[in-house]
Length: 81
Image (cartoon, rainbow, N blue to C red; front, top):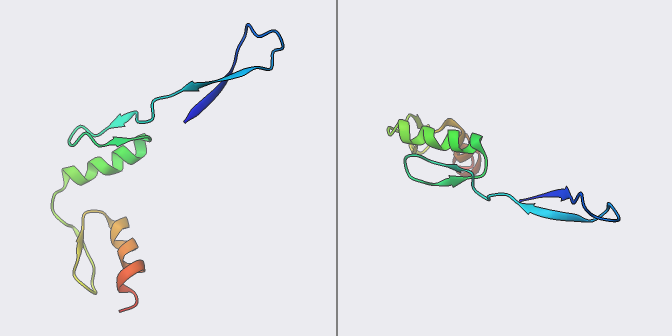
């Protein structure tokens, strides 16, 4: 990721330079997995707080910690059985 900033002491006023930002700013406190967005870290950390599988597929019985993963599974794998 880059942010473009203008250099103030440039004679022409049109020269730009890239400023590096850290690639990973958000780190999971449970497993040290790294994320670029705080929202993704928040969703990931939920998986550590509830170890039991709460959502299961009615077709194959496979369990999931998150409902969105169950919905994706239904669409991709069990819908055509």
